[in-house]
Image (cartoon, rainbow, N blue to C red):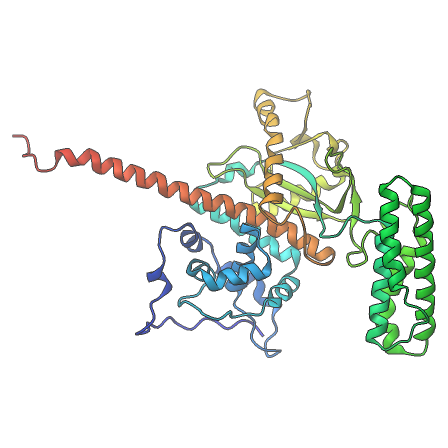
Length: 452
């Protein structure tokens, strides 16, 4: 069912409202007043069905918790704990009285993200830019010139090795067999644990041939275990349904070899969508996750460099083949047509309008203004770094490819809110300084008689 509309606020005798407890000059209080919360309720309302299930949680509560989570780089548990501790967080999420109990279960945030989906969550990113315009931190003219680049959003997986994957396959099959009371001829649990440790030790010492021999032995054990499980569940439909996905992943793991490439290569059993991406970094030759595209303002707005668009790119496509779609997403989010887009040389042969796309190092058709804006193309790198260090772009904990797309959009919205929070704090500090200076200037003239 759709969320219930909040009841009209009624004063209580022994409880003060949150508006009387908090500092109205606090950035979160001012930010809550600038965001158009009704926009979310109108957009997400059609996703609920009347008369089915219990009433949903308030849209402002769920949207506010997700914005705060990605603004400060918190987990679901941490943002719920902060909700109980801070009256500012409760006011931001739409409460009028201080709450001593959590109005939701922590797993409700996971279900809400899955219900809304990555496409509709782009509305949160669009609203952060609209809020920045209301606060005076950015103007529509800043949306006409953008900088676009790609990076990798790493997944929360361990560094994949053959011995780790084979050991993990044994653990998954044995755990499911115990859960469904399936007797196994041999579990290989203890043997695989010792073998994985031996393979790591031998590889560290440079004895790679002996390590490969241990890995081949582990692959044989996992194959025996998979065949044993397949025979035991042949006449059990319930067990077949439970083992279908794990056995398919195990078969993929047994077929692949070290030199294999492409989307069929498996790097994690609990996150099979993970891809191996090499961006030429000296500190990390390969990263395991998904490629993402980021669009930011080229000229620095008064409030900073805002993110105008963000999207996941599963399949590790060529950068140039993603430029047109990224420009289209940016124009939809901002509502302003992109006049010029600045990219690096990795976008050569792109699929966008060549008249408004300029590559780093380009000479033809470059005016002094465009040359100056091209020099600002590298300013997108600190934005990506802050989104990874301060937000969740540096390590994605959300499940599946849908979680990858959701996380990158919310990480972009969190970056914009961090800039907005800092802008509102600076703006109040400047206004306070001007007010003090005006009072000090007027103080010496007070009490003096007017001139004749």
